[in-house]
Image 1 (cartoon, rainbow, N blue to C red):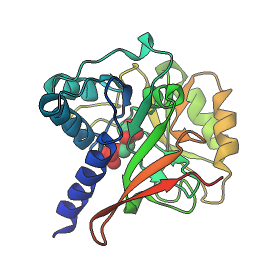
Image 2: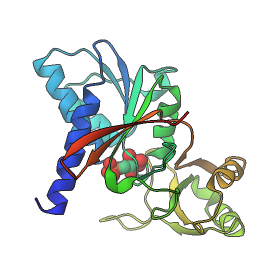
Image 3: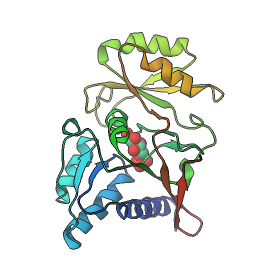
Amino acid sequence: MKSAESNKELKRLVGVAAAGLVRDGMVCGIGTGSTVVFFIEELGRRVKEDKLRLTGVPTSFQSKLLCRKYNIPTLEIQDCAELDLAVDGADEVDPDLNAIKGGGAAHTREKVVAAMAREFVLIIDQSKRVERLGTAFPVPVEVIPSALQFVTARLRALGGEPELRMGVRKDGPVITDNGGMVLDVRFDPRTDLRRIDQELHVLPGVVETGLFYDLAKRALVGRADGMTVETLEKRA
Ligand SMILES: O=C[C@H](O)[C@H](O)[C@H](O)COP(=O)(O)O
């Protein structure tokens, strides 16, 4: 199998496996991205064929549209305080199941949903596992537009190299579902990103970072060798 095809197949495998965690009557957070698409598709199949009853809480407009396509009833995030489960993709995952997310600029809503879920499960392929976060993927930081210059300067002072994320087939910056903009920030690989995350959370104008510390307890990982799904549990 060509690598693009096999990557798609791995995403499908983990998406289907994660849908198996959803039980009748659950209220379930639904993440965003190309892996989650397969999770939603499989939930749609179960709603239709197995008469599964669930309520989805989508983290983006994209996921909401897909839920609608597959007849999955939804609730808005602002109507919820607690969820049974949330499932989402990631851009990088370390051995403690901390993650970088936000490749699709949806990390702010995704983090709210992850935090309100009794269990938050990541679905990834093997290529996204790293020893240290920030090795290959920059840290996405959502900011309100009026704070763009201020936050950019502060990120540089913290040792980061911020780059404003630009639209594809749209002139100008990416605008998130919250009306924010995204700075993709590269740091020296030895940087203590947990400390950076704390500093960013007290910076006016920062909406949310794509650093997901201590949220996931489990990850389903698609492995190219044998095309299998491995379950990782958070280390005690
Ligand atoms: O903002 C987007 C999300 O954090 C995605 O879950 C993340 O970028 C992973 O997406 P994908 O499954 O397409 O690699």
